[in-house]
Length: 65
Image (cartoon, rainbow, N blue to C red):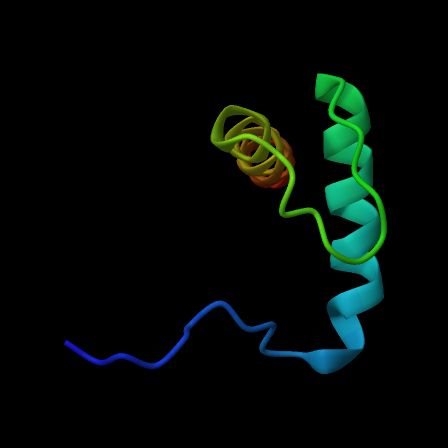
């Protein structure tokens, strides 16, 4: 198994859009994200943001079908 970090944005120009998407998802689930370091979040809070992002991506994909 590779030890490379795969948590990278493949299109660097998309970083701003992904950051905005993350902030919107955090707002929807009531997590107070700030720009920069968010290491003080609990695992539950971070997971809820990621889960909301995935949920929105799936909904968007299903609408496009």
